[in-house]
Length: 307
Image (cartoon, rainbow, N blue to C red; front, side):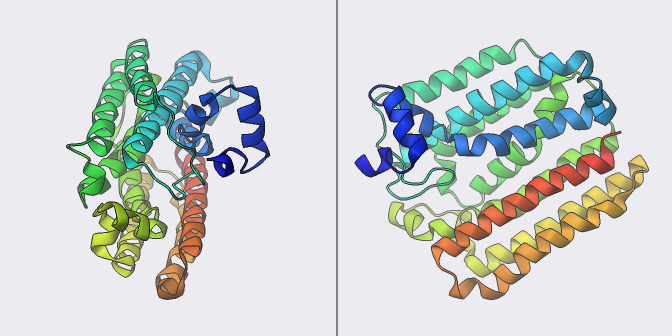
């Protein structure tokens, strides 16, 4: 535990400033993921109000958008990752948290309080946001908590994540603005479901040994590395096909979508060809390169579709 507390300067300062295990509670919310989750959530808001709306300070929906961002990132996502830590009891590095500190005593209570508190705060926003939060709240419990623990059921873990992070996360911020959805923008939001379906197995490849030790039969373990990477390529291509269809419907310039597609393939194809020789650390770096491709995709899609 001493190594976990002194891993870097931020942790040393955190444990000095906050007494006891208080900083461990924050670390198990995995703040390293907050910028990624915040960016993908804010994507839905910008898609709804458009760049002109953002340029005018976000318009009347800005307070709702900021409130939705706080609730979704800190309460829902933070609570979900914390409750995941409670039941995983990881000893090695996990996503967005290297050398996790020992679980603080009341982490389960803390994570449940965040999830429930977020649902109550969601009542201040439009009903679409409330429903999206409620769906993800239920999926969070089913994903991590026994006897369900669907993260250990290959295929079910995949479905939960592709819908929860892929589509419902940006939709929640769109819903917070109160703007109705049209078919073209429905396709844009839905395209992130297969895109995350491609990304999700990539987040498990470097944890093969850890997952085997726990007995978790994740999707990536069932498929194997090669098949997981093939699925990632096919899902990514399918996602960009949906985006191209949305561009036709919305009469947008879909040519810009070629750049992020090429970037994804530049990450995935060499990974597929060389995966057998890669160490867990190389697979982990591959995951972070894929996350970079995701972030660039968000930006380009907004340039194309945010009117």
